[in-house]
Length: 149
Image 1 (cartoon, rainbow, N blue to C red):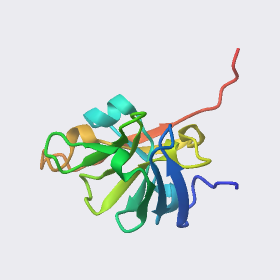
Image 2 (tube, rainbow, N blue to C red):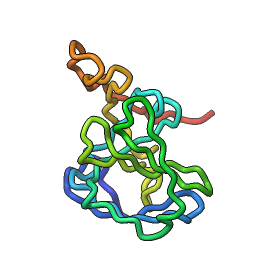
Image 3 (tube, helix red, strand yellow):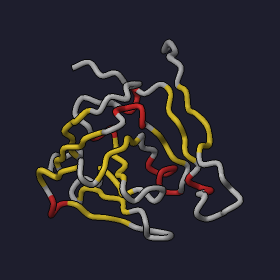
Image 4 (cartoon, rainbow, N blue to C red):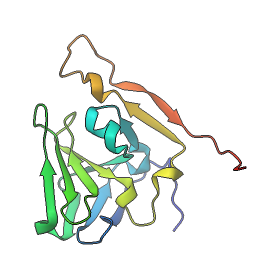
């Protein structure tokens, strides 16, 4: 399957954690055009590229009992990871609790290194924390191919 990483066409993909104990199917209603990174404290540490799904468009197919979750700060966002291998698979977004952020590294056949131009959201200065900070997009992260020595 050839993937168009700029497409806004909806796509449904299967995914899993590293060890395969947690498996899921995720519908991406905005396709890969929703790809983004975030500057909040947890995203800075784990560094994922995420894409948008919804609670209705996400289905765990294996390992419900293997999922653990983590909440911090306001407790609005809930981050899910495998108890066995520790890989973060998805989270409920603080910016829009009706959406899920899906770790693209967990999607079958998808690599976060294939996204060459990614929007970066300023989660470190979330608008809900500071009403004067209205800009949520911090910028873009663009990767340039380079030759290895």
